[in-house]
Length: 267
Image 1 (tube, one colour):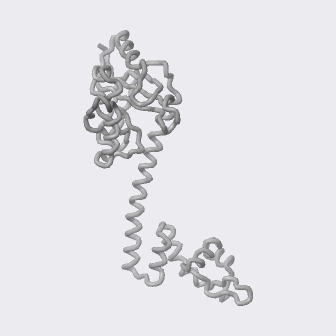
Image 2: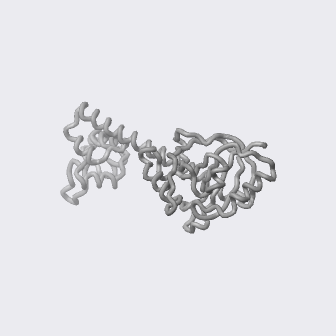
Image 3: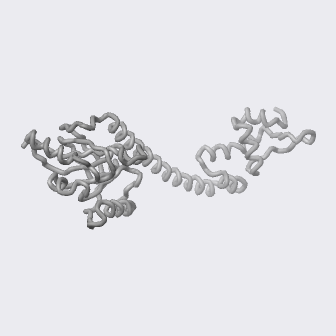
């Protein structure tokens, strides 16, 4: 085996890209054993593959290069245990973050796909599966701050309630009667979070849709009420208002698409 090899040969031997080797050299992390005095080319020793393996292993664990550089010269088993334990904690945090990102993507995609397929003019009786939610505390309304103040308060309590603010937020009424009295003033707000400790129960629901800004349901409550009467239904439980298409989907608030779901049974 040759005493010295070129950066290209070392790259082929070690599996490390030449651009990476140049960068490591530039920042003083891993340098060639010498420079060719004739052309200043980098010259590596084949035995340096062993030394480079420490860096490649640590890099594969996403250990920052600065931390690798600090450990590279004076490493021992105790210091490496501490280094990889710290990285394990960092990866745990990252996995939690990635899981939350996945949940947001899954939930948002489901709502948007549903919003693109519904018949906005139709009121229908459908079976809805149970889903987890995080239910906020009772709302307190002031005449001059209808909807907004409780909504903002709910958002501000996100940390205490363990709510991810990127998850969709909906409104909850305890009964259809309460909903009809003030459709745009839910008794509570909820986060549509799969990790929630409350539940939107499975069951038969009367579902309708309308376009418009938050809390503005146009004639949808009246249309739902008429459907209930015409079809001899009994509104047996809570009412959920949920925006399938919101500011994530549209810049124009008039295009937001709300879904109202009323738990029903035959009268």
